[in-house]
Length: 362
Image (cartoon, rainbow, N blue to C red; front, side, top):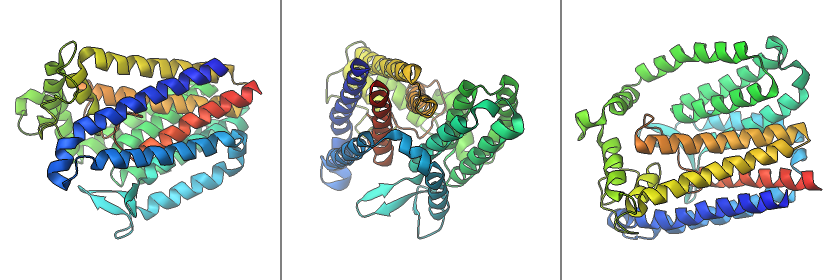
């Protein structure tokens, strides 16, 4: 197990190192023009990394099995935070969404905390109810109701992307735990009209779907972000235009250092750079799955499955959005994109996996 932990840590450190370089490269000009300091986002990202390393160390120092004792309190706290963030003058509003608490210079996103709390609660629930997971009323429905309540609060922010992500993680965990395929399949079918209603009822979501289907039809309007992303990837060719030489980051591609950082990687480092990122994430998922496979403690097993699913799905969606395979979603590329709450909780999630691996070895 030790070699798995080392390889997992090396993979994450490589991704974070690439993130540091590319965040500075993609945000420097924008930060200088808008804020007068080209290192603004770089220094903030380094601060988030320091906080993340401290909390990851704290997570690794504890016994992860103690989380079972506080699984319900963590879930309850996450619901309180999700309600509070919706209250005007309590939650911070930005671009029509109310998703953050402003704590000094740092914005805290409670949906990221809720994601981890839901994952820990689901792992504890599946451990306790493992023999009843195949029963709809006793093993399947209770967890789905808790998940549904959380997703509704996050949709109210509005944040459909994280809602779908949390639902997907829980469904994967239920399926792996032995839930009946007809229960999982029926719920997925029932979710389709609900998703369509949420998309159709919000004009900006419909515009994203239209842009996804044919971004070049309105390349200067609704399809602007996707077309600029594809231009960036196309400009990069095989080996890229060179580190720091991106043209699309010069006020062409919005969110260049956050949701679309892979496009700048593709432009500056080319196909080889993007393939390296994809290979690193494949290796991460593989090593995480190896830890889960070797876990003898059911709670550690389900927790590891949830973490691998969470980070793997985020990576797949972000990469898919960048290349135009999925509609635009506000999910960052784990460990690479600029961001506070997401980066810190993702690092803590990796710390939990390393903790599970070490305890199993002991």
